Length: 411
Ligand SMILES: [Fe+2]
Image (cartoon, rainbow, N blue to C red; front, side, top):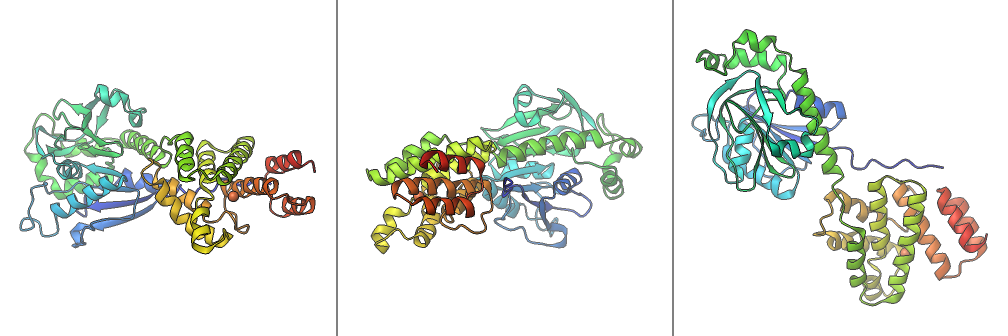
């Protein structure tokens, strides 16, 4: 039987800060909906308070008619300070943050860089270019060197010391700015749709009257087809989200060395974890797990008995239930700060917390960990042939695991 890789990480949660009713999320929301991602909103124009923290993987701060300097007296429902606090908290917690137009300016401000006026006002699609840094940014791999970018702005985001300009136009040198690995400011509106433009012309058409080299007429704005820029934005978001879900992994050797140190010379524990890791790695590779699932499995195998020393001391034994409870907590502490993502650590903690539970095995990583631990225990504790045949029939599911058990114990 083949178990499917449990996609425990596929549901990305996205929170939108929407300032004004008519400045809509456009392609940002359409992209999220196509993927079935969970979305939530703070609708500022309805006087909904901006939270200080959010339970999400991505924050998208949309544009609005305000500027970062707009006060509560000028716009009663807009709270720049609250938005900056949320942005800072999200950046600190490592989730993805995207600011759009005013949102981009607020991201810069939240990170210490004041917004400023754009050299030129731009309304309508303008020709933008990737900078050399933009061409080297893997998330922009699908962007051509020059592309049409939707615009509706007077201002632009500030630059922090560590920020990088990704794209520019003749009228504005900061079209897209990278503030961190997962933090981007889009002065441009790649999310525009014809509906948004129609609303914009109705609500803010006054701003079109001033004219200017880079300001187009309502007719030009409405006639333009935005699908191509939407597709570029969606490609960027796909690559960003994919990288966020599967970041480059901390080497297994690093986790192993840390666990060996944690074992404080207890050779019994060390021999056991090395055995379980070897069997888990072998079965995982033979079963052709995805790179990420294999990685989670190996980290869980190395750390699965992390609670044994504590349980011996606290309960006088290494009973499975205690081990699971204590292990799930201990392993989170142990892995925090290694550079592994929260999602990775959560899954490893789940596996460590369930490795003695043989019901509701909800993933191939879980299944193989149970099988590898059994094979190691069988050799260490001289299990009977009957015990092994029984376990193989009732609990083992992978062909590779069964083969190994048969080869090793000659059954
Ligand atoms: Fe074990």
